[in-house]
Image (cartoon, rainbow, N blue to C red; front, side, top):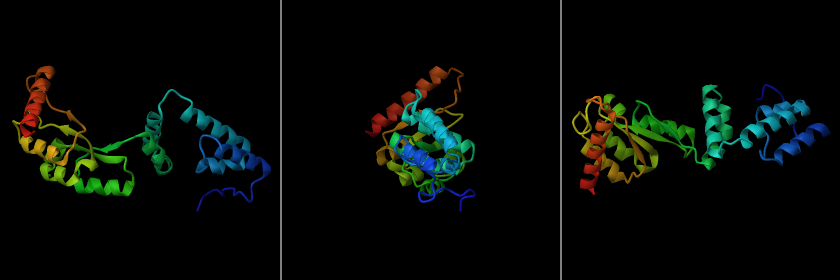
Amino acid sequence: MPRISLPSLETMTPEQRKVYDKIVTGKRGRIQGPLRAALHNPDLAERWSALGELLRYGTTLTPRQSELAILVTGRLCRSPFEWYAHRPEAEKAGVILGLENTISAEDNVRIMDRAQSKAVLVYYDIGNSTLKGFNVVREIDWLGKKRICQMHFKDNPNYLGEGKIDMEAVLRAVSRIGFDGFANLETDSPSKSIETDMKRNLSYVRRIITEIR
């Protein structure tokens, strides 16, 4: 139950109804949450809506950037309403929220299921998962292509292919599920020459991928 009564169409004054109609026929297309409660003061609601429309639709940000900023701000402010209200628009705008953490693939999928959004996916980090004792090859196979938005390749402090992680098996799993998105090298620099070490790791990954194909 709302803490503040929300004016219904049947009980609105002419001034409230005028502002209501202006909002729902405008860019917003609907009125909900705090703005609906603000209808108790039509002048406030009208100005509030105008400011919100300007910040959301009248800046140089693209719709994708705008919706991402809204969701991040909502998260920082611990406002689940922002997720509820903007999830559909964020999905339409192409926003993807990648889950990168140290929990299991199964637990990540539980989060995805609760989010109820096709825009919430796993940002899979093979180094994090290995350090926590998870079988990364099995997890990649289990997650499949559709649940992974991006990947981190690392086996720090080692070069790829020279540490604890069986990188060839990992790359075979990535190929097996048909993943064709981005994979970032989040690797250490044993020689202290970042450019040299990045080239070495990248050459290794490219060679294994070529061999697999």
